[in-house]
Amino acid sequence: MKQLPRAFKPAGMLLILAAGLIHLAAAPDHYEEATYIGVLFSANLLGALLAVLGIYRDELWGWWLGAAVAGGALAMFLLSRLVGLPGFEEHVGLWLGDSVEDYLGIPSLIVEASFVALFGAVVTLQARARALLAQEESSAYRPQRERVGTVLLIVGIILLFIGHVVHLLFFSGS
Image 1 (cartoon, rainbow, N blue to C red):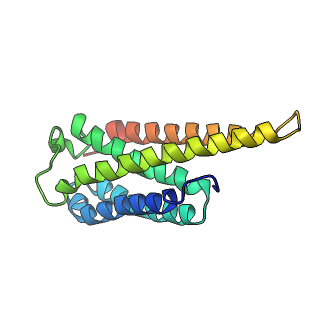
Image 2 (image 1 turned 45 degrees about the horizontal axis):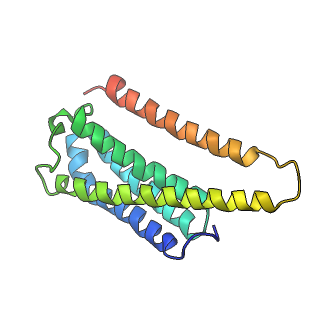
């Protein structure tokens, strides 16, 4: 994580913390409308706090967790407004919301998208740093475990997200 510009770490920490705090502020209203969404909002805050800790400690997993938290929230907001979520169908097409908590949706999207973009830059810079390091190594054979682990993590996050969406759309009772 030493190849990152100095501003990336505090920016990432502030962005993911802001995303978590926005969800904390909006959670009570969502517990009333659809309890599972309130629970997910609370989980968002916990994930954001863990991501802040990881980023603070210069751990790449903190960035990955933050991307899962911010990207998942962003995707679920879009789903809720485009096709609806179980017990939350009345918000389809209601982009700006009809309550103070709902008005936080657009600022949340901006913060989450900014974090995801910053995450993309972090991963790209890390990949470049690893590529340069690999070129400098004289060894002809380099274990591929890290690359396989990254691919498995990405696949796992995607499968978790798909499973969650399928569960919400088809198996949650309203």
